Length: 317
Ligand code: A2P
Image (cartoon, rainbow, N blue to C red):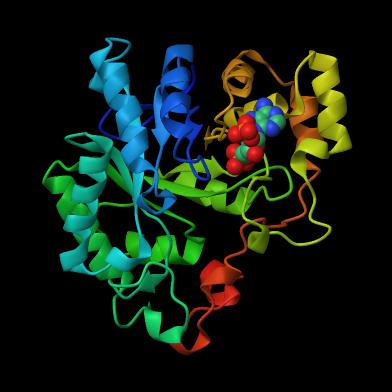
């Protein structure tokens, strides 16, 4: 299994299980099934509203002796309503309690967007905090404090542009160790991936299969579907593989971590087995040519211009 090595020598399995959209009632079994299949990296977040059930699954795997805590890599994320210094610690404590863990392996700032602490999803501008009301520096300093306390081994960010990463790097303290972003053949973000790697920031690909199970209000007509791309389908046929497996191995071969979500035992196995496939340089180049810089998760649900949040300020492009 490929792994990504952190500067302190810790290894994160590059292949992991995504849990966004995994329904309570399904995700506990998915976690247990995945761990039995050999998955060792589970990607979580407080806002997925299923960490309690993921935690039940993890606890059962450990109690049944399938794995030890140390065998697992668990990532979670600080929600947008806990960016203030005093809110970050209670947020990670809730996640630790839900996941039934003493520490998280990797804790990420979920989005570079802040909400008031009593708001989960703002209905209007008043629910947001502008980047002046709670600065990225304040949140990053709170993340570093959580790391120093041992509540999380590693810290990073998600959905950050080069400009926003550079602002944290300029502080001269602990750099983000991870940037988790949307990546698939239609949104390859090679410049961002290269920037991260040049600064010892690992990259995780979310929505690697195109997240077709995302809520309808996040869908637009005519969006390209990576699993249905003809080049990917032909390549899959050549390898006796599925399109999903090609998308997964492509992400791993370009040096990123990848967290395909499934709650279906057959697809969990299929996705895990993608790690055995080898793509040629020619095939990697064929996939590289598919880039359209098209986002599935375009962040338009976080629009509050009066608080400084637009699609342009979010992605800095
Ligand atoms: P399911 O959970 O029923 O398996 P993403 O990881 O990009 O968010 O995509 C998740 C979506 O892809 C879910 O709808 C999931 O459905 C589906 N999926 C997961 N694995 C596969 C696979 N091997 N083939 C086709 N669809 C898959």
